[in-house]
Image 1 (cartoon, helix red, strand yellow):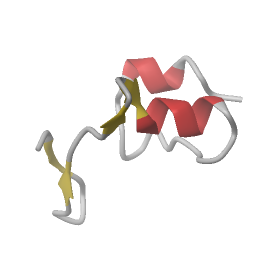
Image 2 (tube, rainbow, N blue to C red):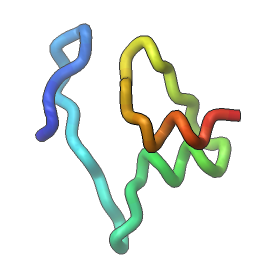
Image 3 (cartoon, one colour):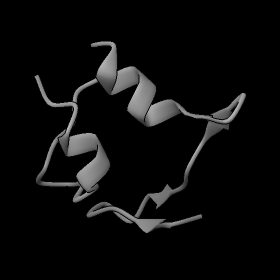
Image 4 (cartoon, helix red, strand yellow):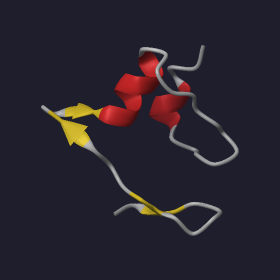
Length: 48
């Protein structure tokens, strides 16, 4: 686990075949990234 969000949900990192799932989804347009909830600089690089 890597912490919790503003609603106290537990957050973690999920990888599949050594690929960060969150980064993959954002990079391919399957998910959005909200800077209000996340300060992950790597995901910010994939904003559209």
